[in-house]
Image (cartoon, rainbow, N blue to C red; front, side, top):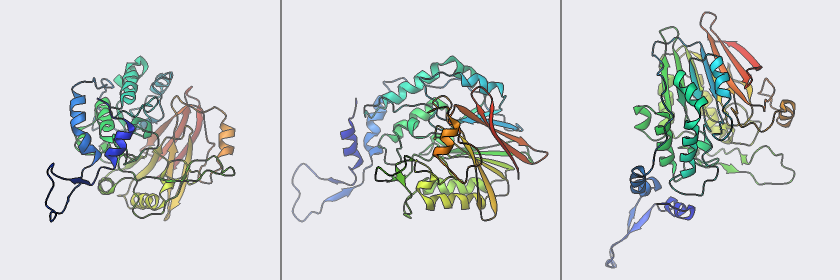
Length: 390
């Protein structure tokens, strides 16, 4: 039971469909417009497929006790299921109380042949689950997850990806998503942990399921190789979709002492043309404004995606906001940090741009009301560190 990309395209443009009877209707009868989405058209196919395939699961994972006083959170992105998994032991040695997988948790679109069953994504999850290093880490450290494009199903894909609902089901099954996440479209979620005075809210955004199409840049010989997209000022473009925006505003109104906001793609930087909030300046400004208007708390933004890492800051209406980008766990595009830094100059970045394998740490000093962001190599060397107070 497979659908070609051509069939998927037909499904994607199938709404509205002009419904008609087999018998010719009287001339005076107007055609009836029926709005049908690819999700609806594919639902019977997925219902049958669900009975025929094994759905990979990541394995047992301890729950984070609601009363836990968090002092160290680790995170990472861009983990290839076919690459060595040595980093899990290194991260475990840092003794995090919580680990956040923030996107490209597997590379499921590699070798994808446009089948609606996303078989390559299913295989990627199965291979990841089979690694003893990953299983051992997951059995000890509570985890939360969101996705980026390669575990969503297609490189750079957004809300128009016709197979997104099946990708979501694979994700939610693998990671054991909560009932709240499974009850709605998309994989965004949040949690609040800790006693009063030491409450940490973790917010995981979904920057894929609802995202509008991006504005592509025209290739020219003299254009620097810093991405294929242009900023799109259109007011009707969205990164999160209105339902998720409203949810985010409600979450930020909840009492918390520190908030960890996770976006799979970068928020602060505007120095490149790859995927990121810079693609939609109106939406980026809305996010910064929404964060500015949050219930009083400390705040750090976490992101991934870039196969390089750095620490960023920006000022928005009198508040300094910080972002820690960590990428990749085991799929580095090189280890020449100086070359990466020179290739992408960025006034918002306060560190080098580290291209070697890495993971991130956020430490909370409750007495000093200080947050420390640290980038670690997969050999546990400190690449960069920044502390700020809230």
